[in-house]
Image (tube, rainbow over all chains, first blue to last red; front, side):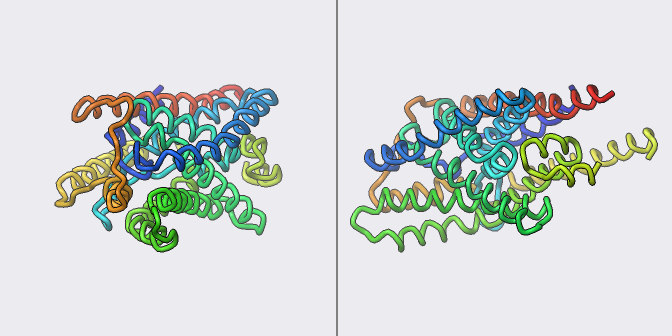
Amino acid sequence: MKKILLVSTLFLFGASPAHAMHISEGILPFDWAALWFVVAAPFAALGVRRLNALSRDDLAVKPLVGLMAAVVFVISCMPIPVPTAGTCSHPCGTGIAAILVGPLVSVLIAAVALLIQALFLAHGGLSTLGANIVSMGVAGSFAGWFVFRSLRGVGAGLGVAGFSAGLLADWATYAATSAELASGIRGDAPFLPLFGKIVVAFIPTQLPLGILEGAMTAGMVVLLQRKRPDLLVKMRVIPAKEATAHV
Amino acid sequence: MSERKRRWKIVLLHIILLPTVLFVFYFFTLAPRPWTGVDEAVVEKIAREHGREARKPLIDPGEGDLLLFVFLVAGVVGGFAAGYSWRMLVSEKKRGKE
């Protein structure tokens, strides 16, 4: 109970109106908003299928999915002040979710979190929900998962791979947001200069925040390796021999 | 490490960490910066330059303390769910082993 209260208290620090990467209502024209819904839908559907398959195989996965859902929801509406830029933004949490429960379930988690935020917290729009799912859910999850798996494949340590995955998941999310925004609002203007302008504008805030997200991701993966190595083996995050070597 | 030492270590850690966290938040609150979100500083600003304005949300929770309250509730619910799931993952498993 004490642990629950401690975690709740820590999250309370982040409970204030957030303003960050989520694209607000009305920013994207209707056709672009609809296109991003079409892109996001199959990923969310596959996420539901994957979650059903995981739960069927092993009920112990449910608390992990619940933990990731809560982490992604809270982290992605937690405004963090960045002194170097004088602005606030938030990490995404999809990197750690993708590592632990897979990128498809991570997309589903992000979709649910974004829907609740758009409905009740005015954080991101409902019409732009598809675009936000694609940037935070699809781009963030798959970038994090791919980086983690690649680095582990070439022998990187769990902490290093986790850090890089968190960092690049965050940056990929903001790069995708920049692309969505540039393509939606450019009108007749060329895409690349506007895309570059938005990316550059994001850099002072997201550069340090990406590092923070990397550290959070690495910390969480390493902590879970200490507490529940069997779970990481089951989710194919680490090989069985690494878990036994650590115990 | 004995249980007594471990407890003292946790208490000392809290004595150092909690005031540090509070000071950091206090400092940020007083800092002479706007601390606007990047949605306002980047997304909406650039969108406005290209003729796109953000509309009011379909379900408008309002401004000021009401919005703060809604975020507070979201933080509590999310934090409780995270803590409960963490306990299910770690503490329950440990109890199962014993």
